[in-house]
Image 1: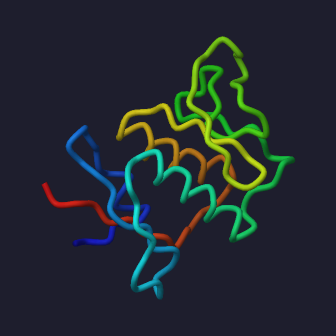
Image 2: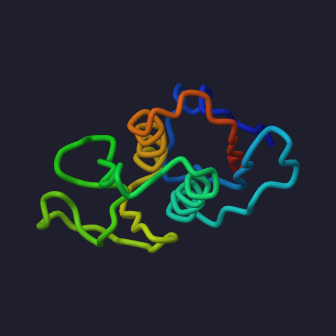
Length: 130
């Protein structure tokens, strides 16, 4: 299974048959963390941000990649526009909206890195073969 870098992810698209398999926290991480599904990948990503001290309450909320009043990460279980629905999961002190399709999960990860000013993250993600 190929490990995909953030640069790889930027040029990829994902559909309902694509499934994340493992999250590798850095280039030396040989085993990686098992990923059960797309929402689990988003939660593992946010935990990676926490573990590496790359996110702080002062930087919240983090908007989703579309930026139309929906938040990807917040300190409470609601979007900027509260009427927008979500499926919120707690990760550390934060809440992550996991109600997205496959491609949106990746786009949210990429836009979060940009929003937080993280230029060269070292994590990698592998995916199940078709």
